[in-house]
Picture 1 (cartoon, rainbow, N blue to C red):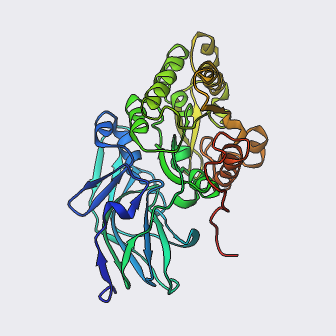
Picture 2: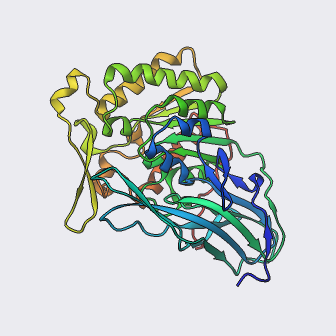
Picture 3: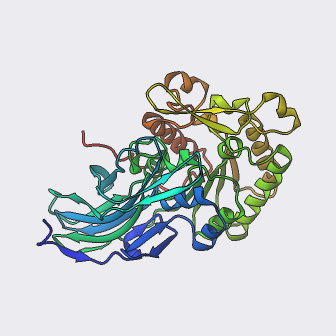
Length: 398
């Protein structure tokens, strides 16, 4: 199938959105946290940061055929069906043009009852795009945000080079599974990816499913990553994992922001509170998982609202604390701003677009959140105003 195609080595110059590329037996594994940070986290974080949300190969070429070999690892739970195959989005000159998936790969099975894991081996797979326009163009291959991915080989029917970086500002965003892309249709249509396209910026997505815990090592990664714009969207994981109390939250956020400011003292920095999540608005965590009659996963809150006066966290409490911290720092930090997450998805939206699993937005809501974030952050009155020229979000032809 690929005998007439030439192989191009996959080098760091071809990859955007990763903080580190780890050499492996098969090729390169993109990581969204550096090795020192990974060593200080847990297994949940290790799985999340290795799923390359926002990571893409960016190429300039006349090729009409491009193939990418990868070795994927899908994460599943024993007794439940695996997620659908991850999607590879192809953008041609910034426009979403084609999609594909691979087969084979490993399966990492988690057993919730015992806490054990088992890895089932599998072969390398290939995603192929053909019929591409026969002209010089920029291609972006966005890697699946739901699969751990190792880059193995890149082939094409014409020479491939790294696309020039250009002068678009770099936006580094940190958040939870919602920023990671849970329930988005594809990697280029997560809300941060769509917002970056609308704002005309280069995205580095540090959204980690289940792992936006105000961790010091994540703050250091943000501090050390070159960025023109930074946003942090925190709160839902702190609540649904029940990891701290109100007394600890404010100082933790102050410390997180202090660390970022050590490396980025005047970079526009936006703190975003949680979007509406009815199960946790007034009920503390921890969260738990239920299955409906069809076997679909549903989330619920198990805490007692009566414990809130004693310091247990709910989303309302978190929003109050985040707004207070930002207000306390504003006199000394004119480049710091706050955005209430309910401006992206609020009570009226919950009626029209309910969270399908009670926790994560669906594909339509990702698009809505992206549109609103772009207007509120990159718009004329927003904290990122003037960072870049707005561009229309990439979309299907027609």
